[in-house]
Image 1 (cartoon, helix red, strand yellow):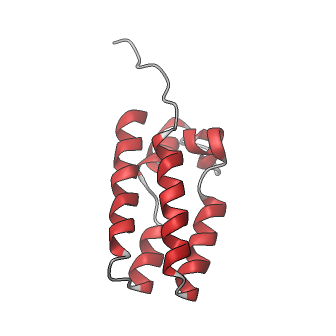
Image 2 (image 1 turned 90 degrees about the horizontal axis):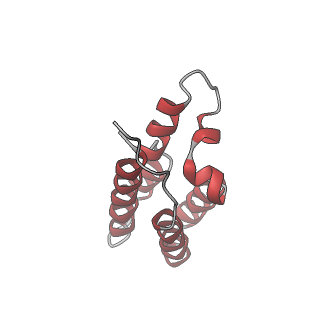
Length: 107
């Protein structure tokens, strides 16, 4: 999968997570918030031997990635602070939409 597909797949995941807040289920949300996404998979493909695939991720390189915000989202989820969680997810989606992609590779 290329970076454009990975970003789009990751955006679909986070939009689905955002919709889950209409009827919040703490365990399901925690599972989804902390799951690997398409950007993770693509970063792993880019650097398969690395123990820290995040360093190969465009989102990590451009805005620090997801580790910190995922922790904050998890904390908001456990606290049942759905409004704050919505704000965090909305902000994260904006960051993902703004991830700059490398030029396509020539075949």
